[in-house]
Amino acid sequence: MQDIGAYIPPCMRRKATASAPAFLPNLWQLGEPVIGWDKPLILTPTTPHYEHTVYCIDVEETHNFITKAGVVHNCKPPSIEDIHWASDSIPLSRILPTVWNSLESDPSPTIEGVKKLLLEEFSPAVVEKSLTRIGKAVGQVKQRLAWHETVQRSYLTSGLTFAKDGRAGVMRELSRHFSKQEMKRVFSALKEMGFMESTNAS
Image (cartoon, rainbow, N blue to C red; front, side):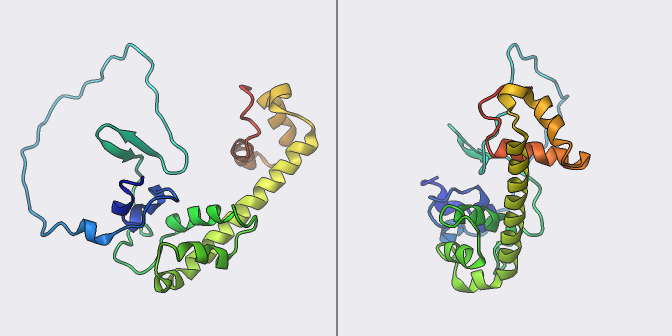
């Protein structure tokens, strides 16, 4: 990340870690584009036979993979909010990680606290133009924290544990307090908070 951080443009900064160097636009001044043509190869698709188990690896937060060929990552279709390289605002996808990082110094995120962190990377003018998105991001994180607190309180009050009672037992008990539609979010919250880390309960 120290080597490639300066090359990562704003629309991809969500992939950068906090220690990555700031983006340097001049590194992308590569001259006029050259149009090229190539002949497509039309091949019959084949499914290879694997003699061993094949794993799909996922990496938390940035989803970056370091290979001998370079740095690659999982992709998603760009949203209107991501396509902002030429605009004067920060996308929500870039602000949200900053809000979560702000919790290291303040357990309750604030717009001012997030602004201070963003000013380390973006100009004051850009940060000011992004206030609406900053407020939205802070609100989303606060809602997520409140949901985690509600789920944690119910889990601890139940007296059950994944190691002792298994996933089925815990989720059956918690389903008395949450709707059927909420149970997937309940499970995700418990996993994110680490309550399942020490068990192989199925």
